[in-house]
Length: 404
Image (cartoon, rainbow, N blue to C red):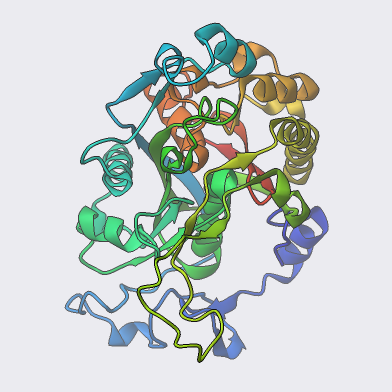
């Protein structure tokens, strides 16, 4: 009964309380044979509990769990490359200055992958920190979601993270590609796996290395982006402790023209000739172009759509704006953050921002800022956070969550 912009509307929630049916959903996503069951199981194969034992192989599921659960954020972690590039450093290669950049964006430094650094290694480091804070062992992870638009393998990086963490039960791991909205989509996806599939511990990682797709001679874009990784652990809990109150998600493909990095065909020597048999074959090798962005249009889109999305999520959660302890937006531009906070009437002291030190780290920006705020003691257990991601696609979405 979930809809695309929130978990349950008030009318649906009241209907569920009256009827209380529980649909048997297995990890495969199929209903149990009887259609309705008193329990909802998490199982790789359709078996009863009597067929599962402590001696089950890693590929088999553990004892089935009730799915009528909530979920909560119990751990976070982050990692960034060691190389720091300041505005003054950029001024040596493009026509810009520290003042020009900081006034227009709020950014003073960014971190960039270099040498033998890898995005996968950053993601693994962030994930380990999140597991350590949550006091959860890698073997107890049921799912790894890697939210990234810059994987180091065309087929996705999540399985390599699962391997590096040492998850011996071979839990599912896959990538989510939604650029700067990716982490919020990952949160919602994790909640759906927990609530509808019986998963217990889900790692949600936001990680991007957009520096690899930046034209460093274009001062309109090269000043913005940096590399980093952030992670949170979502854990199943009793419904009374549920920490993901509502969400609101959207996309508009028409806006893709304002922010994109499209596939381009590389120039190729005529090494493999077609012999005239098939025109245009074999195809040329392809790669992605550098990031193309219309900054003014992206700004207008963000300050218009993000406050609407957060307000919608608050209404679905039945919460007033005054209930927000912290506003945590994708760290794209300080002017966007300030404009959204103003429209939502959130005072500056309740806005989380670390943009000055890292720049726009795409899917990593929200978990990176959250981790710093938690570890510094700013965000405490029980605090309510309104968070939103927005960017390429165009996509945007918000979620109202409680930390701890």
